[in-house]
Length: 281
Figure 1 (cartoon, rainbow, N blue to C red):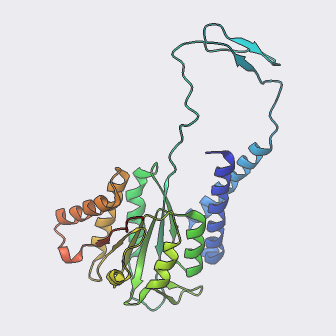
Figure 2: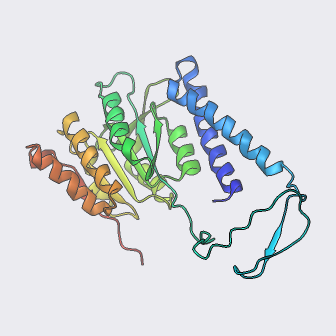
Figure 3: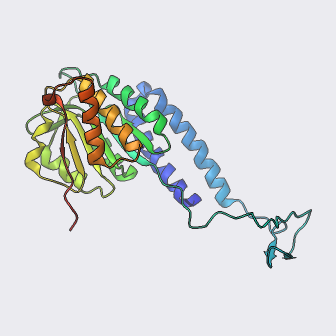
């Protein structure tokens, strides 16, 4: 990945975090503040590197075969040339795979039954900790429509993981004052359908099983039934993401998550349901 691309990614991430910091004010979570500080330093370093002039005096041009290299050009100081036949440079076409972004959104509006969203967040962090080489976790702790919309556009997640309340007509987010804000199923799915990077949506929300009326989308959709306990959602989360980190496809990882529930003796009526993505034409 070029420095320019990396800089753009970090700037997008910083923008999203600064929006969250502005909304939280003095109650901003410490991990958000720390990441903002880290990103600002990293961005400054990248900008400095991109504007720093390259020194011509120390450039060398090496031509010829490995048995008798010829140096040409202007240089100063000693030059060491590796002529070992076993030395191979890495291929310019070898790219480091980009991490998959998981966007975890939590909502606990005023006046609704409290959910253990903090426990779910901690469980998600714990299961993804050894998988940092595969996944990058973004968290919206008090999700509003504006934050969800902006983060989807700027971060382009592969997976959206929602924990909160739902109803027969949709999910419930928060407004800027922390009160409930209803999002209809059609509005939610329509917004998610516009995110081409999305491969899976996990909805841990009461009544989220009514999604079946919406039909298949370009992403896989996993929902938990209304009677599922926190123990169920955490256990499935652990099994599902561990399987993804091991390279399993989403439908197989879903089955693995259900297998873990079976091993823990959880009844089938509490297990999440999967609607597989429609095949591309």
